[in-house]
Length: 371
Image (cartoon, rainbow, N blue to C red; front, top):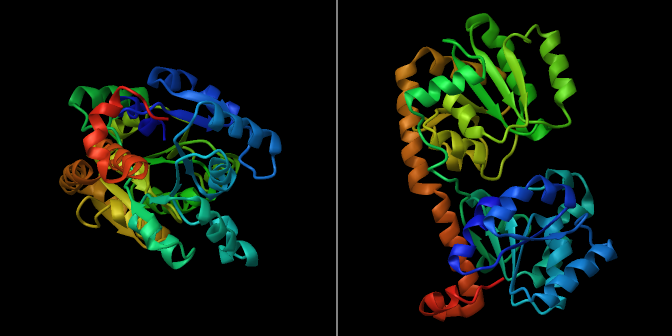
């Protein structure tokens, strides 16, 4: 989201970000540098009338032309308020199925989603599988849905030079041993428990391997305990939250994504942009990023032995790993360049605001600034 916001001023838009105060503080310097104005909303709940009043007042005062929400809960809060304020266009980005709704009769019926769809002009699906979920499960009209892949800055995430690689490995305390990085929140979705099972297998066949967990989350204590119980504390390292994933990928030989479900995984895109081969679970979203046998290796979800075998294969055959990494970089350039995401989003905004005249008005609108 921040990457997209940072590019909007150059395309004639004045971006605002409505988010919780803690998040705004965390991103404060980056938001200021990008010229993004902020609105503090403590929680995206339709029942918090104080926050609703803050957002409604902002929408009417500025005035805002487009409201673009991410995830259904945020959209349920913001989209009706946008209509009440007379905003010209309302967009919702859908990332992945809401697993928390499964098993709950009313919530899994998606009735409320179809009611909220009356307030939404267009849905952005970050992957084709996300688009299919919107039409087949939520029964959102296909004409309201547009797929725009997430993208990354390919200048920031690039194949590292020999000097960059040496520096990155030294910073992480790595020597000549092979290293795999798992980048993601320490939450059940990301599959770290499966990675620990695979590490126990790899400890017997590839004991020199170093596995680095980069991320923070609620499972950290449990995962550390599992590693200790399995005797893996020397093999598995916990790096905590990192704001420099490009350094991690420069240092690593392999990127691993053992997720249980995904929308369109940015970690896999970043790894491929850095020319790192990816080992990942074969699930919706992931298979749209990682080409099995082309830019990485896909294994059956939940299969720790298959995950271990794929990692060992790339560690033992560096020529194969290097070729997959090079293929991944080319794939990222073709499909997942941030510029493609920006262009697709700006085109959508202009279509919603001006219809067929958008292209002709583009140069004139650059000076005015749309919000």
